[in-house]
Image (cartoon, rainbow, N blue to C red; front, side):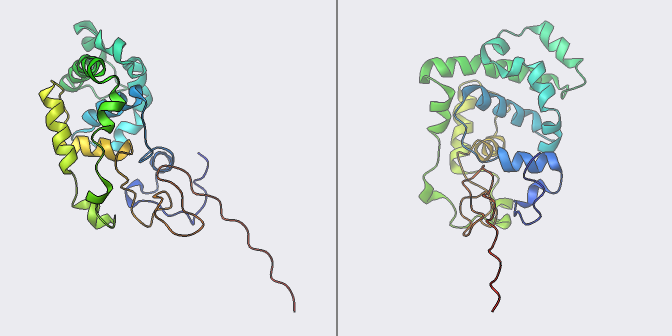
Length: 219
């Protein structure tokens, strides 16, 4: 995992010191995603996370991808009760019947939504909040007190109206954060795009490497 060796890199507090979590923070979290498959994957994995930590899911993500056909929406939508039984015996994933059945149901609902809106991307990005409605400063304290937003509440309500499950407001806000619909990197994070100085980088990208200072001239 490149880019983790720089001790001067400032990151959001929540990724701690776990290399996998730090790499996820640096390369993925908050970077805008408009690919339907990845959007579907994330909303499903956020559902699996309910009651667990994201790191637990992240460590099992490749197993989830294998189990759910790399989150191919059309293939998952055709899963049957036999697939549910198979997945309940898969030790590589979270073996929760309700969440497994929810993923299959949500794939079927995703097809309906895709047919209506043209893509999941068009639908989800239609809920991107106006920047003026966002907090002026993003700090740890701000985020600890902001587990939902008006947009995540409204999006959750609309998804549930459409028959989606495991898509509560908190789950959907975490999805919006991860997929870049909101930029919730703290202001001091080198990946926020708000940090002044040579390490500033757009949200979800790696910070630029500091240029070496020229040696001082002898007088």
